[in-house]
Image (tube, rainbow, N blue to C red; front, side, top):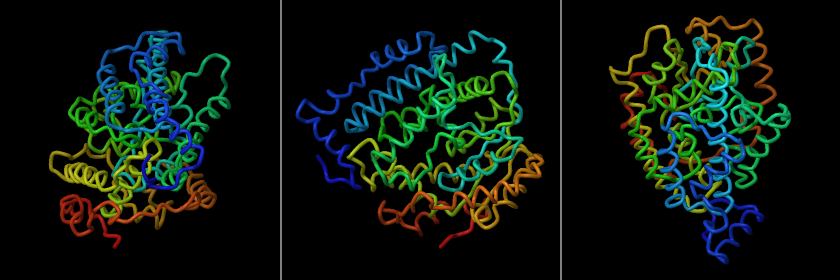
Length: 407
């Protein structure tokens, strides 16, 4: 047992505290990689995983979770569920393409990708843009369960996803104020990349430094190839105008554009003092859903290095994107005038917003005011961070994109 970073519900604490009496959390919930693969094969009745690019990342990830993440019993159960689901999703996507070879030729025309530092408005921007009747954001439940078994309708798979998403806040109630994880809302591309065992999904929920360090130097092309195959399955042969989102795209735009050459990019910007503190806090809360051993200072130090490298790289001369395929969005503009900011950004990309969009945005924000699920509170000092140091280290990024201080 360890002193809790945040209060634990009694049911979580009791289940986790039972583990030492029978040999530990690893005894109660196995993460044997071969057994998990066998479970996915048994669940789906399929055994063709497609290109072998998934297997080394998968095995390295499972080993890192087992050896480094120090997950509690409930956390290991959640990880096991995710691993089986991502393997099952991969099996079903590969099978869908095998049964209908025409899927691979289905266009994904000029999708819009929202990216930028985490906590810079990417989520709410995706939700607002996806309100346009001419655009579609991938919903949480359809990415969690894209090809359900026969007889399972939308309401059922939405209920499956809702249970899973709600569990995060059941295990750690403080998480609800950090991120609105809802089955019926557009969600991040992390789900579309996950069947390739990309690092994005997992860095938010477990401390697996060995896996992350290895994965950071691997080619992201297989993950984006899977992304496109997944999307082709979601649109079921009907080309769709998509609006995607993830901060992880920001450091991988050349690969993204190799897979989606006509993609258009909405890139958000915010004072890095705010984004860094909020990002670190999000990681701390996310990892606390699955482990009692989360060190805010360690998360702050590691995240600070990575974020500084990513943002300053975006300001470099080699990071320029094709003209007409990029629109920059300032967080403060989005907060001050969301209707004008969204419509202007779309027009910059050559997209004519639907006439109904301004009213839809206004009504949506009125129904879901900021902080409606609680207030996400954090401070730089909690994570050993300093505002002046952050601004000095991120000066190239701040100057290149005209980012305004929120001090």
